[in-house]
Image (cartoon, rainbow, N blue to C red; front, side, top):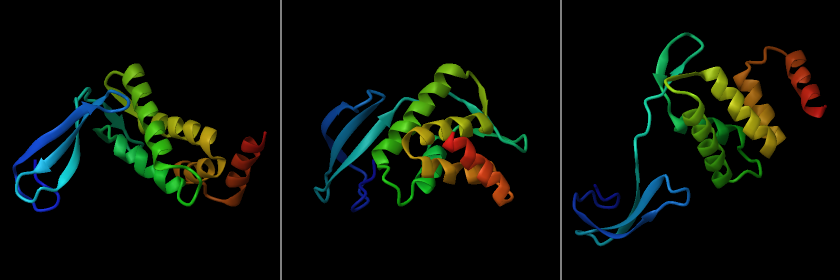
Length: 149
């Protein structure tokens, strides 16, 4: 492990414990050169899930893309990073449990919208407007009507 402070390649593990959701091991490390401490997480590679994109390309599932999209939608909204991480973890767990080899990007987008709708309606509308590629104000207003019902 390379020290993020000085780049040295040797360190010692000071503390090791399961993360809150027990899906990872959190390790506190100390660089043997500069003495700075840093945290690493160790995960098990669980699946080789592929995402089928709208243009029929396939790419490996990446939870970070979900997190990135949610952060954009929740920008300047009262939604914490912890809430976003939790929603992304829930989506990933549902995908792992329900799908074996492949999921469409549309299904992932619908899951993200469902989570955002329950947390922050403005973030939901922001995400939906990009995800559903609204072309004009009529499509946007139609989505708003659904939200108000």
